[in-house]
Image 1 (cartoon, rainbow, N blue to C red):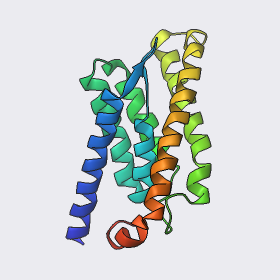
Image 2 (cartoon, rainbow, N blue to C red; image 1 turned 90 degrees about the vertical axis):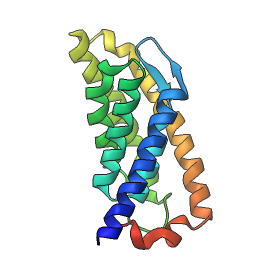
Image 3 (cartoon, one colour; image 1 turned 45 degrees about the vertical axis):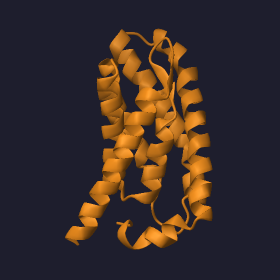
Image 4 (cartoon, rainbow, N blue to C red; image 1 turned 120 degrees about the vertical axis):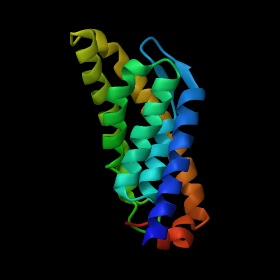
Length: 170
């Protein structure tokens, strides 16, 4: 049991670092923040790891990216939004691209757009100014979904979950 936990922590650590690097260094700046595809790796982690580890990946990767790239003001919102997003996906089953995980892309986009909208409402003290950020959040979710589907289909063709299932499901 202890070996399994260490393995899960190591995989979560690698995913957290991957989310951080992709989010922090492969992004397009916008008026309010930036657009990135790091969420695609959060979705992937959530399809491979049990939910507590996947939530830690989402929260930790986003926290590091925001705090270490000059966007620390976004960190509290990002931690909550990315952790919640990870809950939508499932690591159960033999495929990453299960029907559930494909359908989870829609509420993931809504949580991202709605979550950042609400967080900006708190930051700016009104409900009008944050409306301008919704389009960028939806573009980010679409780009992340494309990355997730491309990698998920590739992993499924490699039978990744079947080969590594014994130590990952929780």
